[in-house]
Image (cartoon, rainbow, N blue to C red; front, side, top):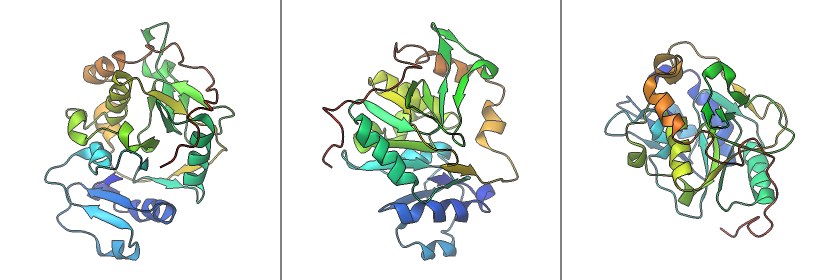
Length: 239
């Protein structure tokens, strides 16, 4: 999880929803000069004060082991108490090899024609999804991946304000499919916050850099939009 001071109101709720479900929660505190005292209530939270503001790429700042199962989470989302169990169960069922998983997914193109924002097909994190589906891009606050399928933050350098697209392009370059997982409604809920976000500041009007990044991967896989079938040979890997 990465955060910054403007999210101080939502951060405790987000942390409290995730920390009990994981072995360690690595929290990157962009723009902070000290670690908030209330974090002591969560002994498995490992707070990091980065040398510079890495924005959303702070999610990639800690380095997991190759076989670790890693959840990328956001500071303005509240996760259901069984969120991690639900995600892992679906990844185990489908098979992990060559895939990363998420709740919030987008299909950005059709027949290699890049959609504008209002035409994209969105699998919104707050809604249910009956079957897991291959997508172009995942929201990085809803991702589950093996450690070996996550980049170091410097590999995404330049993508601080468009982490979702930059991570999707990184996955595409390495042959990793992005999967929006089947789930019930309300597995993740929005925590309403005041103030700016990276989306509102940088991406709401589809700047050319974002469109160019998405054009590098959108529509390039013939599986996009198709239902994900179980890969029995790679399901439930030993970790």
